[in-house]
Every structure is written in structure tokens, then in C-alpha cells.
Length: 241
Length: 386
Image (cartoon, rainbow over all chains, first blue to last red; front, side, top):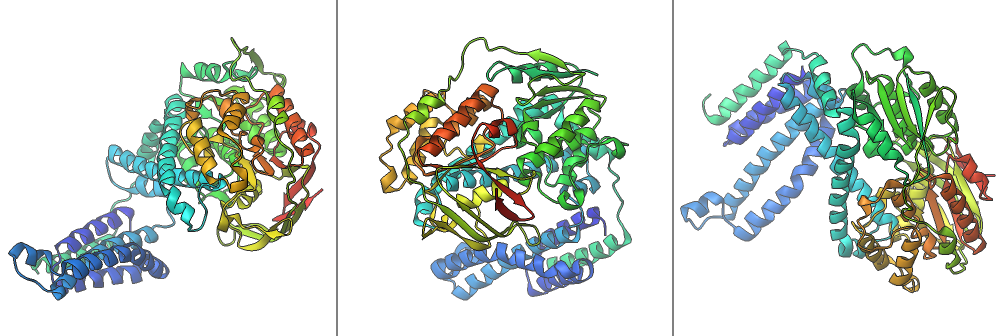
């Protein structure tokens, strides 16, 4: 499989997840996903599914509490002015969570399928305009900057005794300081970079050189198989099949 | 090829001269003292950082490659130690097509061997070099010297007067036993490390770039939690990673990694809020006066608007305020001229005489010689005290 095929596969699964409405559609999409995991990802499957669960479960718990616990009706019933049932609300929450899990799991599986590539190598391999690739690289850079800022702010505040490493009352009281310090750090990291290094080096221009040099493989036969399966499952989900 | 060493005291405009010399003409590579100015910020792994700068058809045999990429390739550049980040930047430069490089005090973070190799590489590579380095008293053979002089005194710093006002202290003994720490499985930093530190002395924490010096300091202030092991303060168990830090005043290698607010006043206010009852007697006025002796007189001073050398000095505020019994300084001499290093050494010696314990990390042997100290060596995941 190629990175381009993987990116298209994620897009197909995303559209399928958003379009699927009935049990058959979801079953087919999940079947394709499981097959993809077993054939392409193998040992990393458990990790991908665990990560997906960690991401989706808190949201599922929150939605369940709100829709089943407090509202007690599904959105469709509210729109129709019907009295509604908690069972319908539960079905609604289940559908949304199945969609989310499918999308997150597809992304995680593809990330693990290409774990041997560095993020920039993955972006280089995508058949996209240089501007789009630069945008992806800068988004990645921003994410890393935020992570660096979180680490920096946390280090500063723990070392100063303002917060503690483990959960504590002090953390509750001073949590807002952490948020403020993270943003201050992120801004100063970015400003420092843009003031001192990037203008003199023309660092962003280095990205363009890198992307133009990169070899972008075409789709492989394996890509066609997974894309066909994904499109087929998505069409069944839409009721077209 | 033009190799230039810009010399002069702090605040003499050396960094401006460096930037000015690089601003015109072809693009130039920049290596500043800390990550924001040493790394591209565009890569999330070391391999990507090298790829960003690598020229088409770069000659690997002629490159400066001090890092073992079999170990480092997947590491995030920002998680490398300060010295390793500088080595990575030099490696990127050596494989790039840039014909010029400006290095602003970055080499001061390198350990002895790496520094010799880096200076040797810079002296033979056929590219233009502009260097600021406080440890080079004179330009090496083949280099041109450019001396800068301050137009007017800026950020006057009086460490002698600052420590003269510090009250005596009875710092507790530190006993570290069976310390284990790893950032991830298989990447152990400490394996069963043990150490006893008596107060009233200075200790130099010594080791190669990436050996774990800063990691040990972060464990002692509670930023990192050891996998196993115990720390005793006197007879009492000490676990700042659970209970918070009220014993070690740490000045970090990069001063920007320790600010708790945007202005000096905000930083002081937030730190004071975390002090324990016995420590609250240190008044705002005293802290503000101490900051004045470090060169910053206004509490409204925005910290990030100060020059780096002034920020670095201000990072010594809490260690030198006498609030906490143990003082830890991570590479305190980076960016500081020789006069300031002498004053710092005298101040640390004085604090030891008052009963405080001092641990400092430095690769600056000239500075270390001025402070009577014991040497803590990190080698093979263990600590030993000479």
C-alpha cells in the first residue's frame, strides 16, 4: 500500500462513516476496517484500537450522560415534537459513537501502517500540490510547538512549586496559570523562531526544496483493492448497493 | 572563506552585529543558544530535521556527524538536551547547501570533546563563519576578530551586594539511593544511582551532552518522577513529584523554561503563592530589590523583551533570594561574559559559606575552577562523587 492509497482509504472510510445509517452499512464498513487491520497493520491493530477507544470513550460517556441521562430523547424525536424514549436516545448515541470510532480507528490504523515513515516523509510521499504539503507541514509544526509549550510551561510551574506533577488541590487552584503559561510559551517560541532563525535562513523555502525533490509513488494494486472494498461498503451504507 | 569571532562584553551589541552580518547577501544558517534559534521547528523527528536542511547530493563523508543516528533518528528534536540540539544543528548545517553560518553562544553548551570537534570542524569547513563565544578569549588562528564595546551600561548586575543580604541557612543533607529513571523502555538514564550531598558545599554535575544532568535536576524539583528509588532530605523522605517542590531553587539552562508569568511582577506573585508558610516572610520588596541587583528594576518589565543575557541573570533571582536551601544552576554561564562568570563564582562560594547547598552544571572549566567544588559524575547510568 502507498501513502496516497492510505490517505484515499481514510477519506473513503470517513465519507462511509458519515453516510452509513443502518446496521448493514456499519457492519460492512467495520468488516472492511477489520480486514484492513489484519492484512495491512497486523501487530499494531491492538494499539490502534486501544488508542481509538481512549479517544472516543470519554466522548461516548459524556454523550450518554447528556442524551440518555438528561435529555431522554433523540434529536429526531425532539425535531418531530414527539415525547421520545431513552432507547431512541441510546440508539442515537450509539450511531454517533460508531461513526466516530470508525473514523478514528481508520486514521490510527493508517498511521501505524506507515509508522516506519517519519511525518515529513509521509507528507512528501503524498501526491499533493507543494502549497498543500507546506500547509500540512506547518500544521504539524504548530502541533509540535504546542506540545513543546505544554511541556515547557508544565516544567516551569512544577519546578517553581506552583503546581505538582500528580493531581492535587494546588493544581485545581493554579490550573488557569498553566493554561496561560502554555499560550505565552507557544507564542514566544513561535516569535523567537520567526524573528531570529527563519528570516535569515529562509527556512520555509527549505520545505519547498524538500517537497520538490521527493519521489511520489503512484497508487499500487493493493490500494485499488482496499479502495474498492471501502467504496463498496460505503455505497451499501448509503443504500445504493 | 571568512571566519569571524565577535567578542565583547554582554550588551555590547554582539548579537545585533551577528544578525547584521548575516542579513545581507545569500541566506545563512543560524544556530542560536536555545531550541527556538537552533532548530527549524518544522520537524517532529531528528531524521526530518536533517532532511529539511539536507542538500541534494550532500557529501556525507564531509559532514559533521557527532550524533549516532541509530539512537537519535526517531527522537523529537525538542526533547534532546541543549548540547545535543546544538550538535544536531551543526550536523544539519554540514549537510546543507548554506555557504554561511552564524553561531550565537551555542557552542558554550557543548561538553569538552564535542566542543573541540565542533571548533575543529568550523576551522576547516570551507564556508563563512560568524561566531560569538564567551569562552574564546582570542580569535583562533585563521579567524578575524571583531570587537564590540557597549555604548552605555545596561542591566547593571551586582551579585556581591545581592548575596550579602541573604540570611544564613541550615540546608538538609540529600541522600539519593537506588534511583532508576528512563524516558521510555530501554532508554535508561539512571540505573540504581546513589549519592549523598552535604550542604554548605558546591557540587559540579558533570557528564557528556545527553548524559542526564538536567534530568537529575528535573527529578529533584519534581518535574520527573523516578521509576524507582528514594530521596531523603536529612532524615525525611522527599518526593516532590508527589508533593511539590519547596527545597530546590532551580535556574534552568534556558531561562525561558522557568518563567511563570509574562512580566517580572507576575512571575514573582505566582511563585510567592506557592511558598510554604515559613518561606512567606520573604517580602515582595526584598525580591524586587534582588531583581534590581540583577539588572531589572521594574516589576512591569516584560521578561521576553529582555536580552538573553539579562534573562539568564534574572533566572538566578529565586536561587539567590535565600528562599530555598538548595540552589541548582543549569549551565549558568551560557551567554555570560568573563566578568559576570567571576562574580557568579564568588556569589556561589559565599552562599556555600552561609550554609546553602549548591549544585551546578557547566562545561565551562574556567568558571568551575573559580568555585571550590566536589564533582558529581554521571557515567554509565550511575552517579559518583569525587
